Length: 639
Image (cartoon, rainbow, N blue to C red; front, side):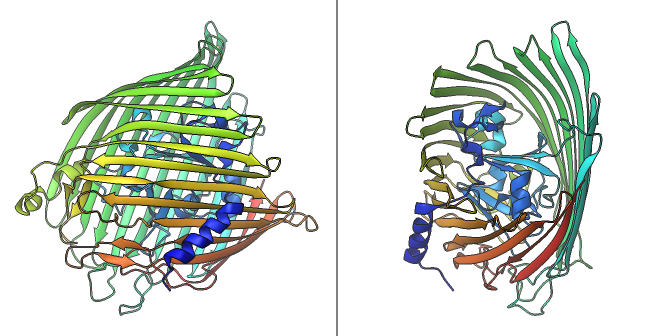
Protein backbone atom coordinates (compact mmCIF):
# COMPACT_ATOMS: atom_id res chain seq x y z
CA UNK A 1 0.00 0.00 0.00
CA UNK A 2 1.41 3.41 -0.97
CA UNK A 3 1.20 6.10 1.69
CA UNK A 4 -0.30 9.29 0.32
CA UNK A 5 1.44 12.59 1.01
CA UNK A 6 -1.48 14.17 2.90
CA UNK A 7 -1.96 11.17 5.18
CA UNK A 8 1.72 10.92 6.00
CA UNK A 9 2.10 14.63 6.70
CA UNK A 10 -0.98 14.73 8.87
CA UNK A 11 0.02 11.65 10.83
CA UNK A 12 3.54 12.83 11.54
CA UNK A 13 2.67 16.44 12.29
CA UNK A 14 -0.02 15.33 14.71
CA UNK A 15 2.34 12.97 16.50
CA UNK A 16 5.16 15.50 16.69
CA UNK A 17 2.84 18.12 18.09
CA UNK A 18 2.59 16.09 21.27
CA UNK A 19 5.59 13.79 21.28
CA UNK A 20 8.92 12.37 19.95
CA UNK A 21 12.08 10.52 21.06
CA UNK A 22 13.68 10.74 24.40
CA UNK A 23 16.58 8.80 23.00
CA UNK A 24 17.15 11.36 20.27
CA UNK A 25 17.08 14.24 22.74
CA UNK A 26 19.35 12.59 25.28
CA UNK A 27 22.25 14.70 24.10
CA UNK A 28 20.36 17.92 24.72
CA UNK A 29 19.39 17.43 28.35
CA UNK A 30 21.07 19.78 30.83
CA UNK A 31 24.12 18.29 32.45
CA UNK A 32 24.83 15.55 29.93
CA UNK A 33 28.16 15.70 28.16
CA UNK A 34 28.84 15.45 24.41
CA UNK A 35 32.32 14.56 23.14
CA UNK A 36 32.13 14.52 19.34
CA UNK A 37 30.78 18.05 18.85
CA UNK A 38 34.02 19.79 19.97
CA UNK A 39 36.37 16.76 20.29
CA UNK A 40 36.38 17.24 24.08
CA UNK A 41 33.68 16.68 26.70
CA UNK A 42 31.23 19.60 26.52
CA UNK A 43 27.97 20.21 28.35
CA UNK A 44 25.19 19.31 25.94
CA UNK A 45 23.34 22.60 26.33
CA UNK A 46 26.50 24.47 25.25
CA UNK A 47 26.80 22.58 21.95
CA UNK A 48 25.77 24.55 18.87
CA UNK A 49 25.81 21.61 16.46
CA UNK A 50 22.90 19.19 16.14
CA UNK A 51 23.85 15.97 17.92
CA UNK A 52 22.12 12.82 19.17
CA UNK A 53 23.51 10.62 21.94
CA UNK A 54 22.45 6.97 22.28
CA UNK A 55 23.52 5.14 25.44
CA UNK A 56 23.87 1.45 26.26
CA UNK A 57 20.67 1.75 28.29
CA UNK A 58 18.83 3.05 25.22
CA UNK A 59 20.14 0.16 23.13
CA UNK A 60 19.04 -2.34 25.75
CA UNK A 61 15.54 -0.89 25.82
CA UNK A 62 15.38 -1.00 22.00
CA UNK A 63 16.71 -4.60 21.99
CA UNK A 64 19.14 -3.46 19.32
CA UNK A 65 21.08 -6.25 17.59
CA UNK A 66 22.80 -4.57 14.63
CA UNK A 67 23.97 -1.15 13.48
CA UNK A 68 20.64 -0.61 11.74
CA UNK A 69 18.80 -1.07 15.04
CA UNK A 70 21.18 1.40 16.70
CA UNK A 71 20.61 4.16 14.14
CA UNK A 72 16.84 3.90 13.75
CA UNK A 73 14.77 6.79 15.14
CA UNK A 74 17.63 9.33 14.83
CA UNK A 75 16.38 12.62 13.34
CA UNK A 76 17.79 13.39 9.91
CA UNK A 77 19.07 9.84 9.46
CA UNK A 78 17.42 7.48 6.96
CA UNK A 79 18.51 3.84 7.37
CA UNK A 80 17.75 1.46 4.52
CA UNK A 81 18.84 -1.84 2.95
CA UNK A 82 18.20 -4.12 -0.01
CA UNK A 83 16.13 -6.41 2.18
CA UNK A 84 18.88 -8.17 4.12
CA UNK A 85 19.10 -5.67 6.96
CA UNK A 86 21.20 -7.93 9.19
CA UNK A 87 24.32 -7.26 7.14
CA UNK A 88 23.77 -4.64 4.48
CA UNK A 89 23.04 -1.43 6.35
CA UNK A 90 23.16 1.81 4.39
CA UNK A 91 22.14 5.26 5.52
CA UNK A 92 21.80 8.89 4.51
CA UNK A 93 22.33 11.73 6.96
CA UNK A 94 20.53 14.89 5.86
CA UNK A 95 20.79 13.56 2.30
CA UNK A 96 24.51 12.68 2.52
CA UNK A 97 25.15 8.98 1.97
CA UNK A 98 27.35 6.80 4.17
CA UNK A 99 30.44 7.48 2.04
CA UNK A 100 30.26 11.14 3.08
CA UNK A 101 29.74 10.48 6.80
CA UNK A 102 32.74 9.63 8.97
CA UNK A 103 32.30 6.51 11.11
CA UNK A 104 34.60 6.07 14.11
CA UNK A 105 34.78 3.03 16.37
CA UNK A 106 36.80 3.74 19.52
CA UNK A 107 38.49 6.56 17.63
CA UNK A 108 39.46 4.41 14.61
CA UNK A 109 38.33 5.67 11.23
CA UNK A 110 36.34 2.94 9.46
CA UNK A 111 36.76 3.39 5.73
CA UNK A 112 37.86 0.89 3.10
CA UNK A 113 39.27 2.80 0.10
CA UNK A 114 38.42 -0.19 -2.09
CA UNK A 115 34.85 -0.28 -0.85
CA UNK A 116 31.78 0.10 -3.00
CA UNK A 117 28.81 1.76 -1.32
CA UNK A 118 27.20 -1.60 -0.47
CA UNK A 119 30.08 -3.17 1.44
CA UNK A 120 31.06 -0.67 4.13
CA UNK A 121 33.42 -2.20 6.72
CA UNK A 122 30.96 -1.66 9.59
CA UNK A 123 28.11 -3.63 8.02
CA UNK A 124 28.58 -6.55 10.41
CA UNK A 125 28.97 -4.46 13.57
CA UNK A 126 26.76 -5.77 16.37
CA UNK A 127 25.31 -3.70 19.17
CA UNK A 128 26.14 -5.96 22.12
CA UNK A 129 29.43 -4.26 23.05
CA UNK A 130 28.42 -0.66 22.37
CA UNK A 131 28.48 1.73 25.32
CA UNK A 132 27.65 4.96 23.51
CA UNK A 133 26.93 6.34 20.04
CA UNK A 134 27.05 10.02 19.09
CA UNK A 135 25.57 11.16 15.78
CA UNK A 136 26.87 14.63 14.89
CA UNK A 137 24.95 16.21 12.01
CA UNK A 138 26.15 18.90 9.65
CA UNK A 139 29.47 19.73 8.03
CA UNK A 140 32.30 18.67 10.35
CA UNK A 141 35.34 18.71 8.03
CA UNK A 142 37.13 21.34 10.12
CA UNK A 143 36.93 19.07 13.16
CA UNK A 144 37.34 15.62 11.58
CA UNK A 145 38.71 15.99 8.07
CA UNK A 146 37.70 14.97 4.58
CA UNK A 147 35.10 12.27 5.19
CA UNK A 148 32.91 14.32 7.54
CA UNK A 149 31.12 16.66 5.12
CA UNK A 150 27.77 15.08 6.06
CA UNK A 151 28.46 14.41 9.73
CA UNK A 152 30.09 11.98 12.14
CA UNK A 153 28.92 8.74 13.76
CA UNK A 154 31.17 7.97 16.72
CA UNK A 155 30.82 4.56 18.39
CA UNK A 156 32.40 3.89 21.80
CA UNK A 157 32.56 0.33 23.08
CA UNK A 158 32.40 -0.71 26.70
CA UNK A 159 35.42 -0.25 28.97
CA UNK A 160 36.60 -1.11 32.47
CA UNK A 161 38.18 2.31 32.94
CA UNK A 162 35.54 3.59 35.36
CA UNK A 163 34.62 0.23 36.83
CA UNK A 164 34.59 -0.28 40.60
CA UNK A 165 34.96 -4.05 40.35
CA UNK A 166 37.64 -6.48 39.25
CA UNK A 167 35.13 -8.46 37.21
CA UNK A 168 31.67 -7.60 35.89
CA UNK A 169 29.82 -7.96 32.64
CA UNK A 170 26.74 -8.91 30.68
CA UNK A 171 25.71 -11.94 28.60
CA UNK A 172 22.73 -12.46 26.32
CA UNK A 173 21.19 -15.06 24.02
CA UNK A 174 18.35 -14.66 21.54
CA UNK A 175 16.29 -16.82 19.17
CA UNK A 176 13.71 -15.79 16.62
CA UNK A 177 12.09 -15.93 13.21
CA UNK A 178 13.97 -16.87 10.03
CA UNK A 179 16.09 -19.26 12.13
CA UNK A 180 17.81 -16.27 13.72
CA UNK A 181 20.06 -16.83 16.71
CA UNK A 182 22.52 -14.55 18.43
CA UNK A 183 24.58 -14.49 21.60
CA UNK A 184 27.10 -12.17 23.23
CA UNK A 185 29.39 -11.99 26.25
CA UNK A 186 31.21 -8.90 27.49
CA UNK A 187 33.35 -8.75 30.62
CA UNK A 188 35.24 -5.78 32.04
CA UNK A 189 36.81 -4.59 35.25
CA UNK A 190 39.62 -2.75 36.99
CA UNK A 191 42.35 -3.82 39.36
CA UNK A 192 44.36 -0.92 40.75
CA UNK A 193 45.71 1.11 37.87
CA UNK A 194 44.96 -1.55 35.22
CA UNK A 195 41.63 -1.98 33.48
CA UNK A 196 40.37 -4.24 30.70
CA UNK A 197 37.44 -5.30 28.54
CA UNK A 198 36.90 -8.43 26.43
CA UNK A 199 33.86 -9.04 24.28
CA UNK A 200 32.51 -11.52 21.75
CA UNK A 201 29.23 -11.58 19.82
CA UNK A 202 27.77 -13.76 17.08
CA UNK A 203 24.67 -13.60 14.92
CA UNK A 204 23.31 -15.93 12.26
CA UNK A 205 20.06 -16.00 10.32
CA UNK A 206 18.61 -17.90 7.38
CA UNK A 207 16.95 -14.60 6.48
CA UNK A 208 13.91 -13.82 4.38
CA UNK A 209 13.70 -13.83 0.58
CA UNK A 210 14.91 -10.42 -0.65
CA UNK A 211 13.09 -10.87 -3.99
CA UNK A 212 10.02 -13.03 -3.21
CA UNK A 213 8.33 -12.19 -6.53
CA UNK A 214 11.23 -13.60 -8.58
CA UNK A 215 11.66 -17.40 -8.83
CA UNK A 216 13.05 -19.52 -7.37
CA UNK A 217 12.05 -18.82 -3.78
CA UNK A 218 15.15 -18.84 -1.55
CA UNK A 219 16.17 -17.17 1.67
CA UNK A 220 19.08 -14.73 1.87
CA UNK A 221 20.99 -15.49 5.04
CA UNK A 222 23.82 -13.83 6.92
CA UNK A 223 26.38 -14.62 9.60
CA UNK A 224 28.70 -12.37 11.59
CA UNK A 225 31.14 -12.48 14.49
CA UNK A 226 32.70 -9.60 16.48
CA UNK A 227 35.61 -9.81 18.93
CA UNK A 228 36.86 -6.83 20.90
CA UNK A 229 39.65 -6.36 23.44
CA UNK A 230 40.57 -3.21 25.35
CA UNK A 231 43.43 -2.88 27.85
CA UNK A 232 44.64 0.23 29.67
CA UNK A 233 46.83 1.41 32.52
CA UNK A 234 47.25 4.62 34.48
CA UNK A 235 51.03 4.44 34.28
CA UNK A 236 52.04 7.59 36.18
CA UNK A 237 50.29 9.97 38.54
CA UNK A 238 51.34 13.36 39.92
CA UNK A 239 54.94 13.35 38.70
CA UNK A 240 56.21 16.91 38.32
CA UNK A 241 53.98 18.76 35.85
CA UNK A 242 52.31 15.49 34.87
CA UNK A 243 48.91 14.86 36.49
CA UNK A 244 48.22 11.52 34.83
CA UNK A 245 49.75 9.36 32.08
CA UNK A 246 47.34 6.81 30.64
CA UNK A 247 48.12 4.21 27.98
CA UNK A 248 45.30 2.30 26.27
CA UNK A 249 45.12 -0.21 23.44
CA UNK A 250 42.09 -1.58 21.58
CA UNK A 251 41.65 -4.32 19.01
CA UNK A 252 38.48 -5.27 17.15
CA UNK A 253 37.90 -8.09 14.69
CA UNK A 254 34.76 -8.45 12.59
CA UNK A 255 33.94 -11.35 10.27
CA UNK A 256 30.74 -11.71 8.29
CA UNK A 257 29.19 -13.06 5.13
CA UNK A 258 25.85 -12.63 3.45
CA UNK A 259 23.84 -13.79 0.50
CA UNK A 260 22.47 -11.19 -1.87
CA UNK A 261 20.36 -10.89 -5.01
CA UNK A 262 20.89 -8.83 -8.16
CA UNK A 263 17.99 -6.64 -9.24
CA UNK A 264 18.87 -6.85 -12.95
CA UNK A 265 18.58 -10.66 -12.98
CA UNK A 266 15.36 -12.33 -14.16
CA UNK A 267 15.93 -15.14 -11.66
CA UNK A 268 16.66 -15.13 -7.94
CA UNK A 269 20.44 -15.31 -7.85
CA UNK A 270 22.63 -16.72 -5.10
CA UNK A 271 25.19 -13.95 -4.78
CA UNK A 272 27.63 -14.06 -1.90
CA UNK A 273 29.79 -11.44 -0.18
CA UNK A 274 32.24 -11.84 2.69
CA UNK A 275 33.75 -9.02 4.73
CA UNK A 276 36.66 -9.13 7.15
CA UNK A 277 37.74 -6.06 9.13
CA UNK A 278 40.46 -5.69 11.78
CA UNK A 279 41.10 -2.44 13.64
CA UNK A 280 43.65 -1.53 16.27
CA UNK A 281 44.55 1.64 18.16
CA UNK A 282 47.18 2.61 20.74
CA UNK A 283 46.62 5.85 22.60
CA UNK A 284 48.75 7.74 25.11
CA UNK A 285 47.02 10.45 27.12
CA UNK A 286 48.99 12.92 29.26
CA UNK A 287 47.15 15.37 31.51
CA UNK A 288 49.39 18.19 32.72
CA UNK A 289 49.57 21.35 34.81
CA UNK A 290 46.58 20.62 37.09
CA UNK A 291 44.20 20.11 34.20
CA UNK A 292 45.40 23.03 32.11
CA UNK A 293 46.62 20.90 29.19
CA UNK A 294 45.41 17.51 27.99
CA UNK A 295 47.55 15.75 25.34
CA UNK A 296 46.59 12.69 23.31
CA UNK A 297 48.93 10.82 20.96
CA UNK A 298 47.44 7.94 18.95
CA UNK A 299 48.29 5.48 16.19
CA UNK A 300 45.61 3.36 14.54
CA UNK A 301 45.21 0.93 11.66
CA UNK A 302 42.30 -0.64 9.84
CA UNK A 303 42.56 -3.62 7.48
CA UNK A 304 39.52 -4.58 5.41
CA UNK A 305 39.00 -7.41 2.93
CA UNK A 306 35.94 -8.03 0.77
CA UNK A 307 35.31 -10.93 -1.61
CA UNK A 308 32.14 -11.28 -3.64
CA UNK A 309 30.74 -13.71 -6.23
CA UNK A 310 27.71 -13.37 -8.45
CA UNK A 311 27.06 -17.01 -7.54
CA UNK A 312 28.19 -18.38 -4.20
CA UNK A 313 29.40 -21.69 -5.60
CA UNK A 314 30.76 -20.74 -9.00
CA UNK A 315 32.26 -17.92 -11.04
CA UNK A 316 35.30 -15.71 -10.63
CA UNK A 317 35.47 -13.92 -7.27
CA UNK A 318 36.02 -10.18 -7.06
CA UNK A 319 38.45 -9.29 -4.28
CA UNK A 320 39.05 -5.91 -2.63
CA UNK A 321 41.67 -5.05 0.00
CA UNK A 322 41.93 -1.76 1.83
CA UNK A 323 44.09 -0.59 4.71
CA UNK A 324 44.42 2.70 6.52
CA UNK A 325 47.12 3.91 8.91
CA UNK A 326 46.66 7.09 10.92
CA UNK A 327 48.88 8.99 13.33
CA UNK A 328 47.45 11.88 15.27
CA UNK A 329 48.03 14.33 18.08
CA UNK A 330 45.41 16.40 19.89
CA UNK A 331 45.89 18.98 22.60
CA UNK A 332 43.18 20.59 24.71
CA UNK A 333 44.16 23.77 26.49
CA UNK A 334 41.94 25.45 29.12
CA UNK A 335 43.71 28.69 30.06
CA UNK A 336 40.63 30.20 31.76
CA UNK A 337 37.25 29.02 32.98
CA UNK A 338 34.90 28.85 30.00
CA UNK A 339 37.71 28.85 27.44
CA UNK A 340 38.84 25.72 25.56
CA UNK A 341 41.30 25.54 22.68
CA UNK A 342 41.51 22.19 20.89
CA UNK A 343 44.33 21.83 18.37
CA UNK A 344 46.21 19.05 16.65
CA UNK A 345 47.58 17.40 13.55
CA UNK A 346 47.27 14.05 11.81
CA UNK A 347 48.69 12.06 8.95
CA UNK A 348 46.84 9.31 7.13
CA UNK A 349 47.99 6.71 4.61
CA UNK A 350 45.31 4.98 2.55
CA UNK A 351 45.98 1.95 0.37
CA UNK A 352 43.79 -0.31 -1.72
CA UNK A 353 44.20 -3.32 -3.97
CA UNK A 354 41.63 -4.99 -6.21
CA UNK A 355 41.56 -8.21 -8.16
CA UNK A 356 38.37 -8.54 -10.17
CA UNK A 357 37.25 -10.30 -13.33
CA UNK A 358 37.91 -7.10 -15.31
CA UNK A 359 40.94 -5.43 -13.70
CA UNK A 360 43.71 -5.46 -11.12
CA UNK A 361 44.65 -2.25 -9.33
CA UNK A 362 47.03 -1.21 -6.57
CA UNK A 363 47.33 2.38 -5.30
CA UNK A 364 47.98 4.44 -2.19
CA UNK A 365 48.04 8.04 -1.06
CA UNK A 366 49.09 10.08 1.97
CA UNK A 367 47.29 13.12 3.32
CA UNK A 368 47.78 15.22 6.42
CA UNK A 369 46.17 18.17 8.15
CA UNK A 370 46.41 20.58 11.07
CA UNK A 371 43.40 21.98 12.90
CA UNK A 372 42.26 24.20 15.73
CA UNK A 373 38.93 24.89 17.41
CA UNK A 374 38.26 27.52 20.08
CA UNK A 375 35.15 27.48 22.28
CA UNK A 376 34.31 30.22 24.76
CA UNK A 377 31.49 31.16 27.10
CA UNK A 378 31.09 34.77 25.99
CA UNK A 379 28.39 35.38 28.58
CA UNK A 380 26.77 33.23 31.22
CA UNK A 381 24.26 31.81 28.73
CA UNK A 382 26.06 32.17 25.39
CA UNK A 383 28.69 29.72 24.11
CA UNK A 384 30.33 30.13 20.70
CA UNK A 385 33.06 28.22 18.89
CA UNK A 386 35.10 28.63 15.72
CA UNK A 387 37.50 26.23 14.06
CA UNK A 388 39.64 25.75 10.97
CA UNK A 389 41.52 22.88 9.33
CA UNK A 390 44.27 23.08 6.74
CA UNK A 391 44.30 19.94 4.63
CA UNK A 392 47.20 18.66 2.48
CA UNK A 393 46.41 15.95 -0.06
CA UNK A 394 48.85 13.93 -2.20
CA UNK A 395 46.91 14.51 -5.40
CA UNK A 396 44.64 17.51 -4.86
CA UNK A 397 46.93 19.83 -2.92
CA UNK A 398 45.88 22.00 0.01
CA UNK A 399 42.41 23.05 1.09
CA UNK A 400 41.03 25.02 4.02
CA UNK A 401 37.74 24.29 5.79
CA UNK A 402 36.16 26.07 8.74
CA UNK A 403 33.20 25.87 11.11
CA UNK A 404 31.47 28.07 13.69
CA UNK A 405 28.72 27.28 16.22
CA UNK A 406 26.64 29.05 18.85
CA UNK A 407 24.31 28.03 21.68
CA UNK A 408 22.22 30.60 23.58
CA UNK A 409 20.19 29.61 26.63
CA UNK A 410 17.26 31.42 28.28
CA UNK A 411 16.84 29.55 31.60
CA UNK A 412 13.77 31.53 32.65
CA UNK A 413 11.71 30.19 29.75
CA UNK A 414 13.48 26.85 29.18
CA UNK A 415 14.56 27.99 25.71
CA UNK A 416 17.76 27.26 23.80
CA UNK A 417 18.73 28.57 20.36
CA UNK A 418 21.54 26.71 18.60
CA UNK A 419 23.18 26.83 15.19
CA UNK A 420 26.26 26.08 13.13
CA UNK A 421 27.86 26.95 9.80
CA UNK A 422 30.66 25.06 8.09
CA UNK A 423 32.45 24.20 4.88
CA UNK A 424 33.74 20.84 3.70
CA UNK A 425 36.15 19.14 1.34
CA UNK A 426 36.15 15.47 0.35
CA UNK A 427 38.73 14.02 -2.00
CA UNK A 428 37.63 11.05 -4.17
CA UNK A 429 38.40 7.68 -2.66
CA UNK A 430 40.99 5.64 -4.51
CA UNK A 431 38.35 3.39 -6.03
CA UNK A 432 36.32 6.42 -7.14
CA UNK A 433 39.37 7.99 -8.78
CA UNK A 434 40.64 4.85 -10.53
CA UNK A 435 37.88 2.27 -10.96
CA UNK A 436 36.79 1.79 -14.61
CA UNK A 437 38.13 5.18 -15.76
CA UNK A 438 38.52 3.98 -19.33
CA UNK A 439 34.81 3.12 -19.39
CA UNK A 440 33.93 6.54 -17.98
CA UNK A 441 36.05 8.34 -20.60
CA UNK A 442 34.50 6.27 -23.39
CA UNK A 443 31.09 7.36 -22.12
CA UNK A 444 32.11 11.00 -22.51
CA UNK A 445 33.16 11.90 -18.96
CA UNK A 446 36.41 13.51 -17.78
CA UNK A 447 39.54 11.47 -17.16
CA UNK A 448 39.75 12.61 -13.55
CA UNK A 449 37.25 12.86 -10.70
CA UNK A 450 37.41 16.15 -8.80
CA UNK A 451 37.02 16.58 -5.01
CA UNK A 452 33.64 17.38 -3.55
CA UNK A 453 33.18 20.67 -1.72
CA UNK A 454 30.30 21.76 0.46
CA UNK A 455 29.00 24.52 2.67
CA UNK A 456 25.95 24.61 4.87
CA UNK A 457 24.28 25.75 8.04
CA UNK A 458 21.62 24.77 10.53
CA UNK A 459 19.67 26.70 13.15
CA UNK A 460 17.40 25.24 15.79
CA UNK A 461 15.10 26.09 18.67
CA UNK A 462 14.78 23.82 21.69
CA UNK A 463 11.94 24.47 24.12
CA UNK A 464 11.06 22.82 27.44
CA UNK A 465 7.41 23.00 28.54
CA UNK A 466 5.14 21.86 31.36
CA UNK A 467 7.85 21.77 34.04
CA UNK A 468 10.23 20.00 31.64
CA UNK A 469 7.81 17.14 31.00
CA UNK A 470 7.82 18.05 27.30
CA UNK A 471 10.88 19.06 25.30
CA UNK A 472 10.66 19.95 21.60
CA UNK A 473 13.50 20.77 19.21
CA UNK A 474 13.05 22.01 15.63
CA UNK A 475 16.19 22.42 13.50
CA UNK A 476 16.33 23.79 9.95
CA UNK A 477 19.29 22.74 7.80
CA UNK A 478 20.54 23.79 4.37
CA UNK A 479 23.67 22.64 2.54
CA UNK A 480 25.03 22.67 -1.02
CA UNK A 481 27.61 20.22 -2.34
CA UNK A 482 29.47 20.89 -5.59
CA UNK A 483 31.28 18.32 -7.77
CA UNK A 484 29.14 15.61 -6.21
CA UNK A 485 30.52 12.14 -7.02
CA UNK A 486 28.04 9.47 -8.10
CA UNK A 487 28.27 6.10 -9.83
CA UNK A 488 27.03 5.62 -13.37
CA UNK A 489 26.98 2.92 -16.03
CA UNK A 490 25.54 -0.62 -16.20
CA UNK A 491 25.26 -2.63 -12.99
CA UNK A 492 28.18 -4.91 -13.88
CA UNK A 493 30.50 -2.11 -14.98
CA UNK A 494 29.93 0.97 -12.82
CA UNK A 495 32.22 4.00 -12.76
CA UNK A 496 32.29 7.31 -10.88
CA UNK A 497 31.76 10.82 -12.22
CA UNK A 498 31.12 14.37 -10.98
CA UNK A 499 27.46 15.23 -11.55
CA UNK A 500 27.49 18.91 -10.55
CA UNK A 501 25.81 20.21 -7.38
CA UNK A 502 23.34 18.79 -4.88
CA UNK A 503 21.15 20.74 -2.47
CA UNK A 504 20.07 19.18 0.84
CA UNK A 505 17.64 21.21 2.88
CA UNK A 506 14.82 20.61 5.32
CA UNK A 507 14.08 20.42 9.01
CA UNK A 508 14.24 17.91 11.85
CA UNK A 509 11.67 17.87 14.66
CA UNK A 510 12.12 15.86 17.82
CA UNK A 511 10.34 15.87 21.16
CA UNK A 512 10.01 13.90 24.35
CA UNK A 513 6.92 13.79 26.53
CA UNK A 514 6.52 12.26 29.99
CA UNK A 515 2.79 11.80 29.66
CA UNK A 516 2.47 10.21 33.12
CA UNK A 517 4.87 8.64 35.59
CA UNK A 518 4.37 5.37 33.68
CA UNK A 519 3.99 6.45 30.05
CA UNK A 520 6.46 8.29 27.83
CA UNK A 521 5.75 9.16 24.21
CA UNK A 522 8.50 9.99 21.76
CA UNK A 523 8.98 10.51 18.05
CA UNK A 524 10.79 12.27 15.22
CA UNK A 525 9.85 13.86 11.93
CA UNK A 526 12.33 14.83 9.20
CA UNK A 527 11.54 16.71 6.01
CA UNK A 528 14.36 16.54 3.44
CA UNK A 529 14.58 18.07 -0.02
CA UNK A 530 17.64 16.42 -1.57
CA UNK A 531 17.95 17.48 -5.22
CA UNK A 532 20.35 17.20 -8.12
CA UNK A 533 20.51 20.86 -9.16
CA UNK A 534 21.27 19.99 -12.79
CA UNK A 535 18.16 17.85 -13.29
CA UNK A 536 15.93 18.98 -10.43
CA UNK A 537 15.33 15.33 -9.54
CA UNK A 538 15.12 13.98 -6.02
CA UNK A 539 18.24 12.04 -5.01
CA UNK A 540 17.79 8.25 -4.89
CA UNK A 541 16.95 6.50 -1.61
CA UNK A 542 16.02 9.74 0.13
CA UNK A 543 12.33 10.07 1.06
CA UNK A 544 11.08 13.63 1.52
CA UNK A 545 9.16 12.66 4.66
CA UNK A 546 10.16 10.18 7.35
CA UNK A 547 9.57 9.76 11.05
CA UNK A 548 8.90 7.52 14.01
CA UNK A 549 6.69 7.39 17.09
CA UNK A 550 7.47 5.32 20.18
CA UNK A 551 5.27 4.79 23.25
CA UNK A 552 6.78 3.23 26.38
CA UNK A 553 4.73 1.93 29.30
CA UNK A 554 6.37 0.82 32.56
CA UNK A 555 3.54 -0.04 35.00
CA UNK A 556 4.43 0.68 38.61
CA UNK A 557 2.22 -2.22 39.66
CA UNK A 558 4.60 -4.67 37.94
CA UNK A 559 8.10 -3.78 39.05
CA UNK A 560 10.74 -4.50 36.43
CA UNK A 561 8.38 -4.58 33.43
CA UNK A 562 8.90 -2.21 30.52
CA UNK A 563 6.81 -2.38 27.33
CA UNK A 564 6.89 -0.35 24.12
CA UNK A 565 5.39 0.07 20.69
CA UNK A 566 7.03 1.82 17.74
CA UNK A 567 5.93 3.04 14.34
CA UNK A 568 8.39 3.86 11.54
CA UNK A 569 7.12 5.79 8.54
CA UNK A 570 8.68 6.90 5.25
CA UNK A 571 7.19 8.48 2.14
CA UNK A 572 7.98 7.30 -1.37
CA UNK A 573 11.53 7.51 -2.71
CA UNK A 574 13.30 6.75 -5.99
CA UNK A 575 15.97 4.30 -7.09
CA UNK A 576 18.09 3.97 -10.24
CA UNK A 577 19.65 0.51 -9.97
CA UNK A 578 21.20 0.73 -13.46
CA UNK A 579 20.88 2.63 -16.71
CA UNK A 580 19.21 -0.40 -18.28
CA UNK A 581 16.43 -0.44 -15.69
CA UNK A 582 16.20 3.34 -15.34
CA UNK A 583 14.69 5.45 -12.60
CA UNK A 584 12.00 3.76 -10.53
CA UNK A 585 9.67 4.84 -7.75
CA UNK A 586 9.75 2.94 -4.45
CA UNK A 587 6.51 3.15 -2.49
CA UNK A 588 6.24 4.58 1.03
CA UNK A 589 5.56 2.45 4.06
CA UNK A 590 4.54 2.36 7.72
CA UNK A 591 5.67 -0.51 9.94
CA UNK A 592 4.89 -1.31 13.55
CA UNK A 593 6.96 -3.09 16.19
CA UNK A 594 6.28 -3.93 19.81
CA UNK A 595 8.33 -5.34 22.64
CA UNK A 596 8.65 -6.01 26.35
CA UNK A 597 11.46 -6.47 28.85
CA UNK A 598 11.03 -7.96 32.32
CA UNK A 599 13.72 -7.76 34.97
CA UNK A 600 13.42 -10.92 37.05
CA UNK A 601 16.01 -9.89 39.63
CA UNK A 602 19.31 -8.01 39.79
CA UNK A 603 20.92 -10.56 37.49
CA UNK A 604 18.43 -11.91 34.97
CA UNK A 605 16.05 -10.30 32.49
CA UNK A 606 13.88 -11.80 29.77
CA UNK A 607 12.68 -9.90 26.74
CA UNK A 608 10.82 -10.29 23.48
CA UNK A 609 9.73 -8.25 20.48
CA UNK A 610 7.71 -8.45 17.30
CA UNK A 611 8.96 -6.69 14.18
CA UNK A 612 6.72 -5.69 11.27
CA UNK A 613 3.67 -6.61 13.33
CA UNK A 614 1.19 -6.47 10.44
CA UNK A 615 3.47 -8.27 7.97
CA UNK A 616 3.72 -5.22 5.71
CA UNK A 617 5.06 -5.89 2.19
CA UNK A 618 7.48 -3.05 1.56
CA UNK A 619 10.89 -2.31 0.11
CA UNK A 620 13.40 0.50 0.45
CA UNK A 621 15.23 -0.20 -2.82
CA UNK A 622 13.69 -1.06 -6.20
CA UNK A 623 13.12 -4.77 -6.79
CA UNK A 624 13.74 -5.79 -3.17
CA UNK A 625 11.49 -6.41 -0.18
CA UNK A 626 12.35 -6.12 3.49
CA UNK A 627 11.57 -8.84 6.00
CA UNK A 628 7.99 -9.63 6.95
CA UNK A 629 6.57 -10.48 10.37
CA UNK A 630 9.21 -11.66 12.82
CA UNK A 631 9.18 -12.60 16.52
CA UNK A 632 12.23 -12.79 18.80
CA UNK A 633 12.87 -13.66 22.44
CA UNK A 634 15.96 -13.62 24.59
CA UNK A 635 17.51 -13.65 28.04
CA UNK A 636 20.07 -11.26 29.51
CA UNK A 637 22.30 -11.73 32.54
CA UNK A 638 24.33 -9.04 34.31
CA UNK A 639 27.05 -10.12 36.70
